[in-house]
Image (cartoon, rainbow, N blue to C red):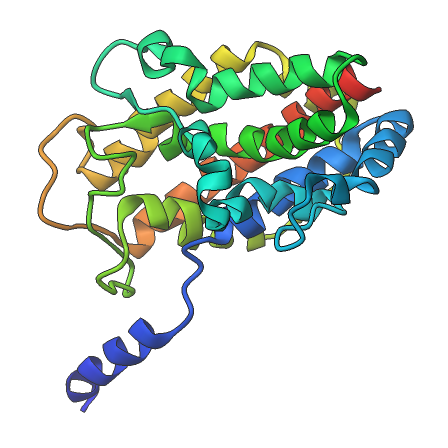
Length: 281
């Protein structure tokens, strides 16, 4: 009886709304909320002051009135077409996980996420930059710090950050799933929803343990997680092994991936708080 119902179950699953964009909504919003909770009161007030003027961006379809809205603004503007098409390559950096870490080659002309984080920091630090440009830099920064902490925005296996790797997530295997969408959506939602809440005031010791290093250091760390956790778990332990026609993350594997995914969200939030304090505090 159960076997006879499996095709119907699969069809119903395919019709369910998927969290394929959960990281760029739930994940990015969580990174932003962690940061906002952990910045100084002065920085928080300046963020609120700037976002209160976010109508200057002239993107009514994509508001940025709060840190949560600002955290997804950079993805929302993709639907505006040619106006922001120049920013399409700023969300990631395809650094091959099977070769030595080489950020320079992946960031030619500054068209990668880590280079744009550095650029946004410079713009926010410069009081001579017009307010509209600084607000845009703030929205980009909030989003891009989240992006660089998603491993498949930092590491690649000649597969566009897992976008070309068809994958099943436990029992869920609709055709639209791939390894990137699992880490971006299904796994991110599972990790962030797992208690205790990630949104809290972290202790100075907790922050000190995470906040060190440069944007390049954070990029290298995410790249290493892509290699040693993301691809290794998907490819049977060998991150540089051949990619099968479809990989499957079973329940036991998913359970092991929850904590690394949670840690990346925490890192993103606390490091974003550091950058915001340095630029706006």
